[in-house]
Image (cartoon, rainbow over all chains, first blue to last red; front, side, top):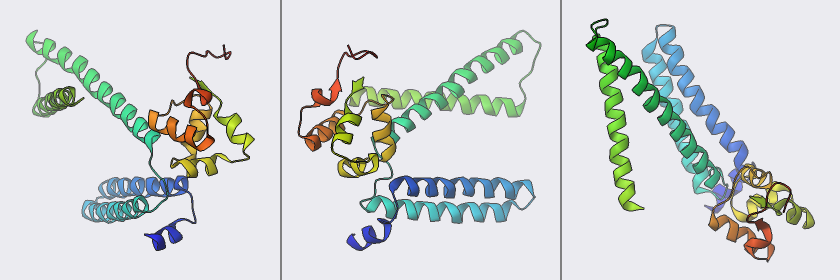
Length: 139
Length: 69
């Protein structure tokens, strides 16, 4: 690990964090670009390759003495997950309750796609409930 | 929560990055704590107190408002 630290110690954790973020972001961009230009397979291969490079680099940096992620990052992740959950959980609730009410009123009929989205949203909320129950007993 | 982290750090002539490296966090974390945007964990608070050779309450001023009362 000492050799690794010598090599990686040249830059700060902040720099590595930015580089890793750029690698993960470029993986997503390559994937979307592949689909956009009709080369989904190449985009997917590029995505997997870049994501793996990111994971390996991430693992190597975390094994060194360079601090890339710390408790503030955990807090940032927690808040991002919370905001994301509220957006999709709360937003989905409003949308699907309105759609179901419209369906019961006979002014709307859920299509296959919307029904699949509704089931996915229900699974998302139920999974949250399972995790909440688990952690409420753990903490 | 108000704190005296910047003051203590500057007294010792340390940069945010140097202090971050000493206590094992990122520079952004030290910056956020100094600006009062992030309250550190108990573990980090004790780590900082140990580094500065003081008590946590000498760094973090519980109950102090924006005017430092």
